[in-house]
Image (cartoon, rainbow, N blue to C red; front, top):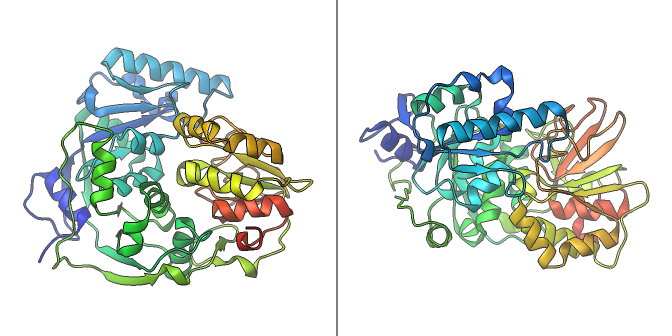
Length: 415
């Protein structure tokens, strides 16, 4: 019996010829990514005496950049001191920053066939690069010192995406359909293949991979096709070994989806699991804030779509439309393309590149009774501020369309 993509990566990292679901494996990591939040005093990183390999460690300041509080500023002081003490060359500080998962994909710090760890739950985003990656939480302290960690190998669910996406239906809508139709994937890996995947850009795949955390998947992986190989080789000279699932690999389930039949979807408050509907079923719900951003949808394609939606129009009275690029690189490209000017002329706010409003830290926190439609990663109660607020999740096209009307709106009605 053959192996899946995730199984092959874990087997290599564990120094084994083969692994099977249910097996415990101890693995050597190829990359460990730390964030500004990791350097709060409670995380004990100031007690580290040595690190396993400074070249395999990266520090990305992303959640609270520039620092909105004294505590955040002091976390960053500790992060810079840590990088200097241990010779960590991959430090992405203010001015060269972005959301960590976006930076990982842009550099790239994750490569096909590798194993990447980070404390943040959306680390699974790197699966778009044919990499096994997941959030490790407090385990990062041990990984930082030893370069090793352990996993229980999970079974894999394969999604075969057929057909062609009909714009403005997007990769985010594919995820929302899956979350609503199939629910959570606890202790399971998911992989995506098929003609529709081949047609997707790397960043569209990255959106789906990021959202794997919201269905509790262990690893979310995509194949290393010619498009991904070209993407990686254009950005790095490091060698890498892509993996693909064997023809006789064993899957917990194989599910085919014709994406050409999908329409825009919305997740209702306060979860995405078995809680999504076609947008027309919630059309007309009043909103106070519309947010485009996060590691899932703060991409250039998202900002381009938003600019296309609002060009020559105005944001509805009483609505705050906030757009947060996922990285400084995306911000610069959006400025060059004229997207930022278009958004500003429409009455949107384009912020610095950071996590920002997505985790309810700064630049768009919600108050009690407010309703937000977001293309970010989570919509659970209290995620973006007050637990008395309501968060609907949708694609960036749906968010931008809703910002213009002041109510949840099908983007096909605006384009």
